Amino acid sequence: QVRLVESGGGLVQAGSSLRLSCAASGLTFSRSAMGWFRQAPGKEREFVATISGSGINIQYSDVVKGRFTVSRDNSKRTVFLQMNNLKPEDTALYYCAADLAIISNSAPLSYTYWGQGTQVTVSS
Image (cartoon, rainbow, N blue to C red; front, side):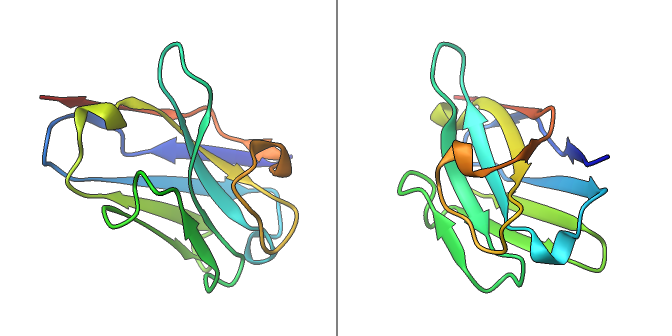
């Protein structure tokens, strides 16, 4: 059974940083591309970043590029999202997702497994 568990969310002020983690179990982690998505109330789920199984191929949305960094530690079966210079518009429920392919993309439908999400709230 595949399980993805996010952690690290919280309430912070604008300009602050947070580091999200997503611990995976039940899948061949090093061969699974991982993605981060977010969803704000009343909005569609939005792509944030994706990282290939090897960690070499990385893609960000234009909105977070330069502020967020995705990484992974395959020995710990964990993917991270370092978020710097947070803005109120970054407020959302953040999800990690796993693709059965070693390289993925920005489309939510490409991902097979999803976590329950961790809330990030940025106050102005």
